[in-house]
Length: 180
Ligand SMILES: Cc1cc2nc3c(=O)[nH]c(=O)nc-3n(C[C@H](O)[C@H](O)[C@H](O)COP(=O)(O)O)c2cc1C
Figure 1 (cartoon, rainbow, N blue to C red):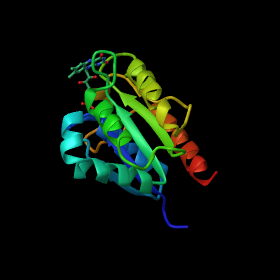
Figure 2: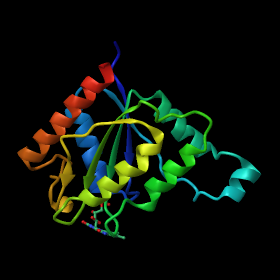
Figure 3: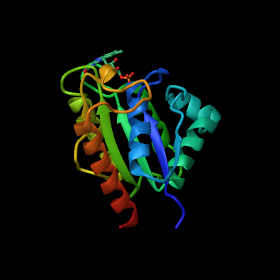
Figure 4: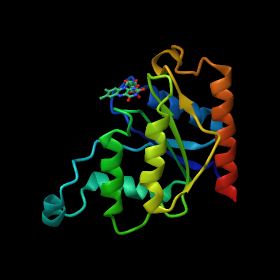
């Protein structure tokens, strides 16, 4: 079997995002895989635009990437104790496409945030937001990277062995889920 296709979705758009570093670390700790990141710079959902113009190309591309992936990794920041609008907007747009790309898809959700709880509440809310789409979201181990702006070295590696071990365990579970 060829290396699994893993799609990463980062809830932060900024270049130096800790959540993007976490996605890349997770992909590295997953082991051999074909990793790509989905682009969440989508227009804001507007039903008038949808009626007038249909599904935007960028949304269809994202839905196709989800459908084609063997598994999806999501890393979310916490904005005011909730997931960023970027992620919810993407979920809402993808829900309007004809396929149901999330159905039965193995998914690992993580969070990284500056606060002490590592985006725990944001991650919980995101998990609830995904219930309608019926993916196979791993229940654990839970990855919440606290104080996230100080947890990655200059090469983007997690400094803490404990965090790295938890991410590696989660990736092992994801690998098992793909082959289940
Ligand atoms: C609008 C906004 C709201 C935020 N709210 C929270 C919060 O509720 N909890 C928290 O731990 N950090 C909060 N932060 C700080 C983020 O955790 C921090 O900016 C983090 O680095 C964002 O993730 P990123 O590095 O992937 O961009 C907030 C940041 C922004 C911009």
